[in-house]
Length: 427
Ligand code: ATP
Ligand code: MG
Image (tube, rainbow, N blue to C red; front, side, top):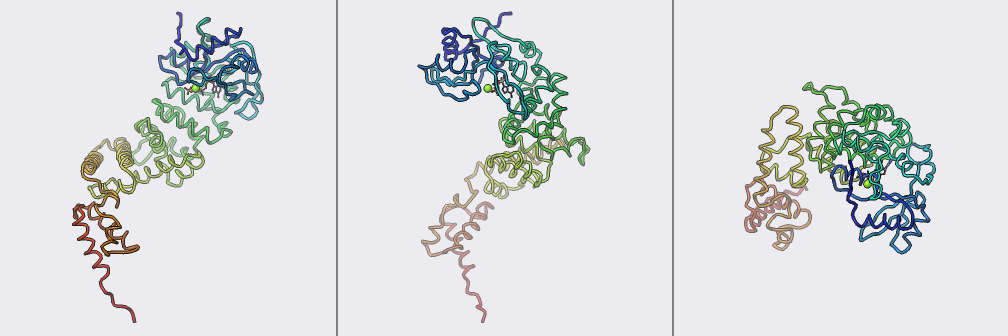
């Protein structure tokens, strides 16, 4: 069957320019894969037999950035888009399980495709020749299979990051991992020790936020334990309700909102002790915002949900409205998996809706008076100002004091009188 891919004009023009100068050029990798799947590619990469210095010559009148010239890559600006153009190359030997010791430029496209990780990522296309599919990528796409190009053990030894890339692509497209590739992933998982925390964290993000995250967790517990040894204790152990702890974790991750990485990461770590969570986040070199989200969510997941409007207001005040929603949702996930009951969650959601429906009273900024009003009226000075405002907030949150200027000032007067009542001074 003839395969036709529509290449956007800004990328097609680069190919035509190279062809005009006597070179061959193709779109390659992710953009071919995504097009064949009927999905919109994030970006269009081009490969060519033109050597780096020849590419610079061809595009001398274009805007060009020498982004990776040593590895044969330049970035060409075309109609407002940046397009990476790379000379066909092989990657030589790898002595550190991650970086090729040297790249070698080659002149035949199949040699370039052979260095690529998976068959579905190893296809090229141009309008003249159609699809170049040396390793059966199109068939694997049709059969929804992720398979290494070449010998899996060799490929994972060259670059251990491919272990996590495999899980990420399989999770993203909900593909099965071909048997030999899957065995090899398990066998070689400890090579991940040679991969930097930053890269692992980025791939983990890709895996956890993909539609098939739960399936990958279920199928490859030993890989996740290799990057997060804290998780190893969950694999094969049963919790108090007789549920397999790892299966439970996989379900919890899958049930958390896919677009929210921090909440999926929190579910991955939710059965660990706070100390283990902290050390896992530090080892992964998590960014601070994600780490803070995870620890806050897990701290509140370990505590009971608010059971009254004042408690709900204080929860929002100490976290945020969004975090309160995440906390209720996380309780919902864990609760549903354990008891199949949603009662507590439903009533917490109702409380949240009621609180959000009423005028906000989450922190002292929401009070109808501020510190200045207290100082102006000579009611309080210094630390007492803050203490009085906090007390007023508590009472407004408790719905025992209306949040109006008049009633707050009256109550503040009462409070200061209580505080300033003459005390017996010690002799
Ligand atoms: P995405 O949509 O996630 O960007 P992609 O396929 O474009 O998917 P990239 O990481 O952008 O993935 O890499 C582009 C191409 O380069 C891949 O399709 C693959 O052919 C090749 N590639 C990238 N990383 C590796 C690697 N570690 N080992 C082998 N080939 C790789
Ligand atoms: Mg890409």
